[in-house]
Image 1: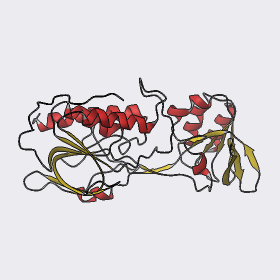
Image 2 (image 1 turned 120 degrees about the vertical axis):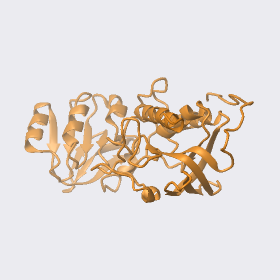
Image 3 (image 1 turned 45 degrees about the vertical axis):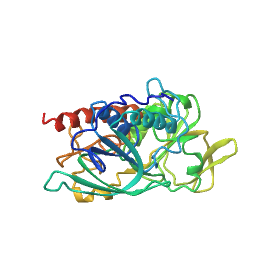
Image 4 (image 1 turned 120 degrees about the horizontal axis):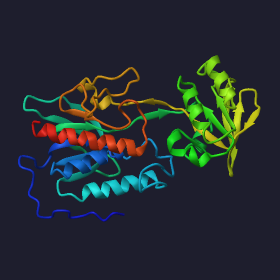
Length: 323
């Protein structure tokens, strides 16, 4: 662990902000939220991070591509981030599931309510600025055994995990329009890839012809399950009962941004349902920023989400200064 504590024990309280009033409340304690929080408390902003401790990638044992932390577990990365953030005198981290955010009142305050988790207390707080970094929910293909192999043999992030599947017989399971692009990316690491479209028309005839030319097979039959044993995944089970041998691969979930707690804000969304933001992370609602997976283009590598959080933090700090 980093051991960052008591950075400035003699620091004075932020004028006008005490108790349950904050300059900024950040919803979500993943890489985007923690990065934003760290950068803001280093500007002496009084910041509260509310996190439900339900990360989307909780099934992933190892994460990759984060400079100096390649191969670290996502939970350890979050723990390091919480420790670094909490070491600053104007920082506060609280485990809570946000239930509502009320629009700014006439005095310029957002009211945020959260329900405590894992023994934490319920909270009702106010903030001048809200930053949404709550991440996404994902729905995997409806295959009975897929969860048993998700995060070990099967993954969703190609940039994160393809290298470790090099030269293996892989599957790509999905029914979305970007299946072709994902297959091309995976074909960089293996010459034994089968795309399972789950009975859908996700791959066009022209796309299939191109994939075949790259040595990639397209299987359009319905899939009933994923097969395996104690040693790991062993194949993909088609609807007719036949098993196509595969040792792992990638799945393309359907993602959604569950922001029922923020409905009262009336945030603009893009056609995919992600929160619409400008280059600095500003949403359509003044005083509300967003960063990470809930913004276009959706799921991102951890280091990309962290960068987006840092960029949003810089914009928030300038906005609080009236710049």
